[in-house]
Image (tube, rainbow over all chains, first blue to last red; front, side):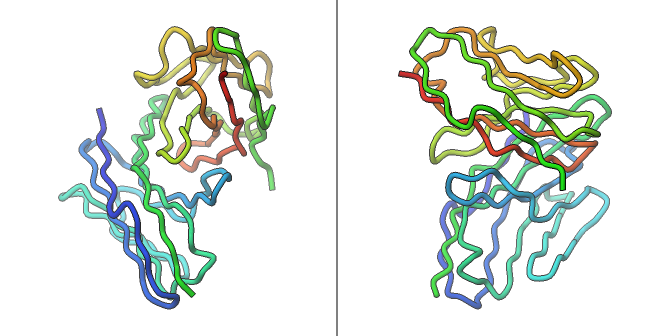
Length: 114
Length: 111
């Protein structure tokens, strides 16, 4: 089955600095890569996603890069703010008609220090 | 904006009892999912459901678990005989093809 590794498990940055979280996966059939932000006691919220035919995607302060050959993708948050503090999960999905399986990474607890 | 809803928000049950967790997916979505998250751990896939049948399930989703879409709006997860280790947050999600939207979760505590 799919194996998703996520690093680091915790990350502390000063407000205004950048944060980078990395994930690797094993199944080359995976073709959709979302990132979720989860605040304490809340549901995972999609913050950005990328499809396998795209190498990079940006949305304001958040960007995701994908290297399909190496089977890794990264989340980049620039100009971090205290409200970015949360747990971030990467996920890997195979979209193939009725076949829908999602594997989550182990999560990164991001702390932005004011 | 439409949202996935779940009931109840909290459920306390005795070991060995049956529980049913309920979800109302977003109305035009075709794919439905259940996940669980043990406190402080990652989100774990349980099952996906499409076209009125299970399309994929994980090794966690054993014979104690079942899912059903009893009508056009509800999607349920049943745990037949709960164990202590079933204590977790259970999230329902729905999607068109790709983007999943999560419900607020049901916190299940098995005593």
